[in-house]
Structure formats: C-alpha cells, structure tokens
Length: 118
Image (cartoon, rainbow, N blue to C red):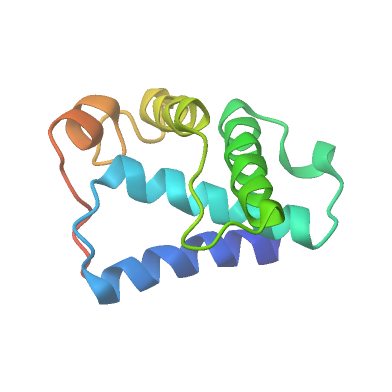
C-alpha cells in the first residue's frame, strides 16, 4: 500500500507542475483512481486496499477504464460516468476533504483548486 500511496501523491505532484486547472475534487478523485490502478496492476488483493467507500468507488472507475483499454478502442479511454460521479461524491463527502478544495461544494461546485505550490 505504501507504493500505491506514492503513486497517489505523485499524481498530485504532477498536477502541481502542470497546473492543470482541475478542481480539487476531480484532482483527488483521479489520484484515487491511480491508486486503484496501481493496486490492481500489481495484484494486491482487493480486501487490502478497496476496504472503504472511496477506494471501492475508485476500484469501479478503474474497472471501467480498464474495460475500455481491453476493447482496444483507439483514442483516450473514458471512465464510466456514473462510477466517476460516485467517486467524486465519495471524496467530496469524506470528512478528510469536505471542507477544502476536495469537497463537493468548494471543489466540485465552486471549482476551488489546490494551491499547486509543490
């Protein structure tokens, strides 16, 4: 799990460097998707990482993303819209993120971003 957390934080670091303009909620949700992808692709048993609602939702987003890759469709694959919204809601309602840029109101609805100050 430590390596998965590093992947999560590395995406935040990339966003700091790129200044992508993503709201904090979408940024946090996408970092959880990267965590889920890392865990799946390294074979970490799911009970060890998808044991909370955010991780379970991230696992579903990763599943829809990987299903697009498996189809072999050209272009950038899409995640499932419903799964993505459920993940964003889970992140936004979490006590860890609710009052900051990762929250539903501040991040998702008002578009507040993280400071991207490295």
